[in-house]
Length: 339
Image (cartoon, rainbow, N blue to C red; front, side, top):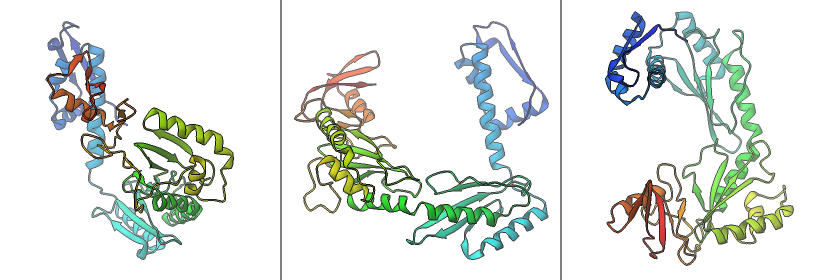
């Protein structure tokens, strides 16, 4: 945390051009180093309090950026301690060491040959200040730290946690192998969900509890109203059939009363990929097609952005406030979307 003295004088509270900002030497240096155009910031703000809020937010970003890019220059004994801890973990487990020495990646291969990474960042106050860790576990790695602790104790705890989640990853592997997964396209070990295609532009997000992966998951359906309602009713009627000794895909098939499509299907069901009818992809900057044509004979899905851009290009489309009113590109059914 850093403290700065800020002085803002205001001539006319309603006229940002009359605002004058000043501060102590450290703040002035920070402003100069930021390279930001504060005249532009003044002009966009509607009041002095609005400006101060925006200014503080901007300075926070500048400070975080400066801290992030500050060179790692610890005392020699800190480097020695890092190397000693690293040797205790086993140099064969070292996946990456940054050129400055402030970050290392330790690997661990589990019993199913899955490789897991523990990323560790050190501050110049290590080991008095605990290292920052990031792992590919489905839950945060929590550990106790004091200056007498070693990195090996954290690494051993990480390996122990990896073993605890073997059943979770087995369930996720089952979904990846035996269903048509739309999202994520490249699953990570930490991902606790899979969006699975069911056909006819319907999909279901299966959210699995990492510590109890065989229990009933959270199911979130997406698609045309009629088939989604039918699937939800089927789940409600059959949820008592959930068998914790079976795989998730076996249980889902029992819940829905259907065979789950997979990418190995010789004849996949119609519209199984749930792709946008305009860009022909499922994910667009992390967003799924969430705008549906309400014609039951069409039910084509679209990304909100794609539909808005398509309607924007048509002279026949009406605009009202922040809405476009036009037609479905496939069946000409009336449709609307946000601009």
